[in-house]
Amino acid sequence: MNTKNNFPGDLSTEEFLASYWQKKPLLIKNAFPDFLSPISADELAGLACEDNVNARLVLEKDGDYPWQVEFGPFDESRFAHLPESHWSLLVSDVEKHLPETKYLLQHFRFIPDWRVDDLMISYAPEGGSVGQHTDAYDVFLIQLSGQRLWKIAENFAEETLNDVDLCVLKNFTAEHEWLVSPGDMIYLPPNVAHHGIAQDNGTPCLTGSVGFRAPSLKTITSDYVNYLNENVHDASRYRDIAAVKPEHHAEISQQTINDFIAYLKQGLAIEHEHVTNWLGQYCSDNKTYEDMLEEQQLDNFDELLALSTQHTVEPSPYSNFLFSRINDSALLFVNGSRYQTSLSFATVLCNGEPLDFQQLLPLMTTEDKKILLMLFNTGAVIAIDNT
Image 1 (spheres, rainbow, N blue to C red):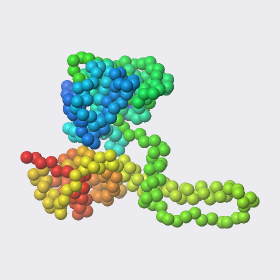
Image 2: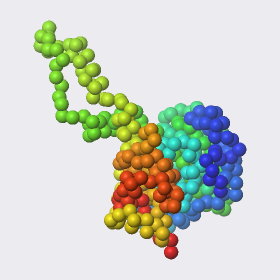
Image 3: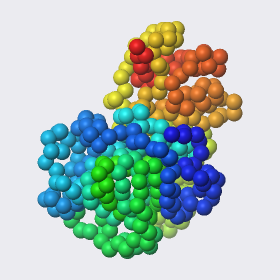
Image 4: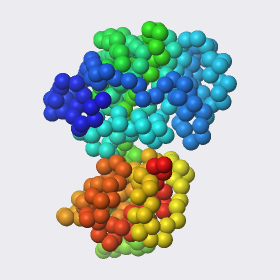
C-alpha cells in the first residue's frame, strides 16, 4: 500500500483541498488498490475486551430500547450473546493500541498532525450501523473489508430521536447512495448527514474512520484562559485608574465598564508567544493515556545509545509529538510538555518513525541528548527488543 504524502486515488492533494475539503462529500472508488485489512474482526473484538481501550457496542434492535449503547471493556462472552444482525462494535484510537494500523494515517498528512484525532475501526454484521447522524468534524471512511452501503445527505431535517443513546436523525432522505468495497474511501465534511449500513457479502464488514479534531471556541477559550492563569498571570488585583465620586452609589458607571474592558484585555494577553506555548501543549496533551507510559531508568545518554544497538528506539504509540519553529530552533511539545530543541532534532523525532541514531547523532545538541534521555525515562520514547 502506497504511504506517500499524496491524496489517495487519482485526485491531487491540491485539487482535493480546493474543491472538497470542508465543502462537499467525495467518493473515491479503489482509493487503495489491492487493499488488505490490517485487522480482523476477531482482533478488533479482542481489543475491545482490554482495559484502557475506548470501545462501544451499538444495538439498533434487541436491546432494552432502540439504539442502545454499551461501553467496554467487554467480557469475551458478551460477543457470544449478540443478535445475528443490526449491531455494531466501535473501537477508538486503534492506531495507539495496534501501531501496525498507524500507516493508514500517513495518507492524510497533508492535514497537520495536530488536527488528526484518531483511527476508529468498526465491525458490523448485516444491517449493523450507528444510525443516520452527523459529525461536527471532517472524516475519511475507509472500507477495510466486506461491504457497506452509505446513504448521504447535505440537506436534512435536524430533529433527532428521543430517548435513545445516540443522536439519530428522526427524518432522513438520502441524496446519494454509495456501496463501498475494500480499498474504497469516502470523505465527509462536517455536518453532512450519513448512514452506513453493513452488507452481507460473506466477508466481515470492517470500516476505518479517520477523524479530525475540531475543538469548539468555548473549549479552546476556556483552556487558554486556564493556561494564562497557570503560567502568565500573577497575584495582582484590580486597582482604580482614577477614582471618581459616582453620581449614584449603586451605579456601575460607563467609566468603570471601560476600565474593566482594558483590565480584561490586559489579562487575556493574546500574544504570539503565549498562543504558541498554549497551542502546542493543548494539542499534544495525553492525559487519556498517560497511565500507559512506562517509566525507565537510564543514567546517561551513552546507555541509551548502547541500548539502541540491540533495540528499536521509537516514539511510544501513546505519546503525541508536535513542534513549532522558532527561528533556527524549535519548541518541541510532547504529551502536553514543552522543550527547547534544535529544529533538526524536533523534525526527526516528530516523524514518528524508529530513530536512526547514525543519522540523528550529528544533528543533536547536548541539550537534545538530555531531552531524548528524559523522554525515554518517562516512557514517551520506548525501546523494542529486536531479538
